[in-house]
Image 1 (cartoon, rainbow, N blue to C red):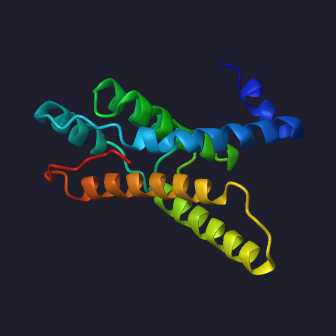
Image 2 (spheres, helix red, strand yellow; image 1 turned 90 degrees about the vertical axis):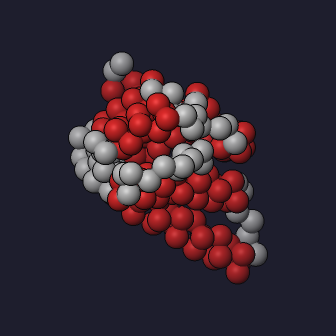
Length: 167
């Protein structure tokens, strides 16, 4: 894959609107993905603990995050829909300009994104402006943050069982 073709959409203003539309359309499908059950068998639980123990979402690069998701998917811990939904986090990181090997605190990033969206919605409500897609974006970022927080909890209590990673 060429990086130039991946980044082309970020510099072309005509594509930016299409990307926003696609993101909003994907966001409208997310509740279905969130309801997809994650496997809860002993094998999946052991695989999940093993994978999560090797990554820290409070200090992780986009490349490592993609690798973690891929391993979870291959191990059967994440279903196809969950994998696709959570892979959009990588798109968020790319749009933030975070380098593939640059460490980032994903929990902090999504907390800030949520705060910013809430502020924008509040300002828009006070001025009487409607925020198109604001509720959908808020729900999407909230669900991603909750998933990341579950991973952090699993990392702090690796012997805990019964964690459901469905968003």
